[in-house]
Image: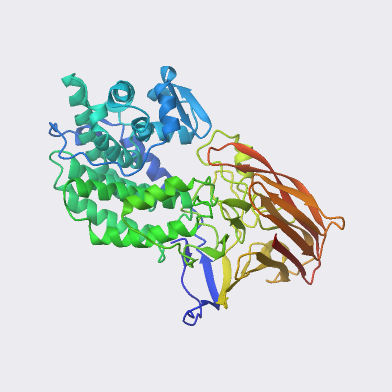
Length: 577
C-alpha cells in the first residue's frame, strides 16, 4: 500500500479524524536493479520461439457472447475517425499514415490506438455500414504489425486486458467481413492474447496493470470459445490483485484519480461480460466496487469532473457519471479517504479536494507529483482554485511535463523554490515527504482540516502545517499556512511562496493595498481574497484542460522569508454577494 497503519491512534470520533492520525510513506527505494532486469528479461522471452509455442492451441470458431460496452464513446473523436484522423488529447494522426509497427506518437495516443479504445468512439459516431470498413481496416493494420509477432509494443498484458473486452464488445464491427481468413485471424489472435495473459498476468506489478490483465483473463474465459477453465483462476488472481492494489477505503495505491477511473471502468466492463453470460457478478468484485466508486466520486469537483492529481487531467463529469452507472453502484462521494489520502470538504455549492497524504511509494508510480497539502476548490460548476494539471499521455515537451509535477505547479506552499518530494530523472518520485499528520473536525456544519508534512524538515528544519476551515454555507474558506521548526536540523529560515493557481475563466484584480484581490468568475459569483503576514503578488500561470490544451491563467502568490523560529501566513476566500 502507498500509506500504512496507525501510530498510537485512538478510535476515530463520529465527526472527524482524531489528532495524531499519521499517514506514513513506505521508503522502499523503488524497484531494485534485479527487478528491473527481470522485467526486461520477461519481455525478451516474449519474442522467443518457445513463447510462441506456448501460445498455440485450438482455433475458436466463434465468440461465446458479445457483451455491451457500458462506457459511452466520444462522438467528436469518432467523427474525426470517420474523416480519416485519430484524435487524442490535442494530438492527431492521419489514418492513412498509421502504421502500428512504427507508431511514432506520444505514449497516450499510442495506448489509445493499441488498446482499441477508439472502437467505442467510432461506434458512437455513425451507422454500422459507415464505421465497419474503418474498424476492419485498422484491425488488419494491427494484425499485420502484431498478430504474428509477440513484442512489448503490442502485447503488454494491460493492453490485452482492455483489448479482449473491446474486441468482443465490438465484434459486429471487426468481424462483419465475409473474408473467412481474416475472421479466423482475428479470433485466433484473440485466443493467443488470452494465452499470453494466462502466463503474464501474475508477473505484472501490483496495481492497475495487473488488475486489467487478470480481468482480461476472466473476460477471455467468459467470452472466447474454449476458455471456460481459466475463469476460476482469473477470479482468484483478480481477487488477489484488488486486495494488493486498493487501500482500505477503496483508493488505488498509486493515488491517481485517473487510474481510479480506469479501475472502475475495468470492473464495469467485466460486469458486462458476466451479464452477457447471465452469470452472477462475484461478490468480491462487487464489494471492491462498493468502495472504489465512492473514492472516485470523492475526488470530483462541482462540475462532476475529476480534480487533477498525480499527473492526471480533469476528466469531464459525463465520463465519470457513465462509468459509475456502468458499475451498478449509486454512492455518495467519500469525504474522508484516510488511507488513499484525499480529503473532501463540501458545504453549500463549494467543494474542496485536499491532498492530505504522502506521495505514492517509489515502487508504484512514475509520473507522480510533489503535491502534498495542495487543494483544488470549485463553486458550482466553476473551478476557482486548481493545480496546473497533468501531462500524462500528452505530447507536451518533457521539461514542461516535468514542471507540471513540481510542488510549485500545485496550490500549496513551496520552500526555497524546491519540491516537497524529489522528482527523479527517470520519472519516479524520490525522497521527501514521509509523514503527514492529519486532524479533521466537523461541528455545527463547519469543516476544519489541519494537516502537516515533513518534506522540508531534513533540508531546512521546517515543518509545513496547513489549516483549512470551510463555513457552513460554503461561502467562506479560511486558511493558514504555518512553518514550524522541526527535526534535528536547526532552521536558518528560507524563502517561501504560497501559490493559489486560478481556474480558467477567473479574472483577478488586486486591491490598492496589495493585501487582497477580487476574483471574477465567468458565469458565476465573484470572490474576495485577503491575506495577512505578507503581501500579495499576481503572476501568470497555466492550466491543462480536459482536452490537454494549455490555458493561460493567473495565480495568487504570497511570498516572503521564513524566520528561523517559524512563520504564519493567513488567508481568506469569501464569496462576494
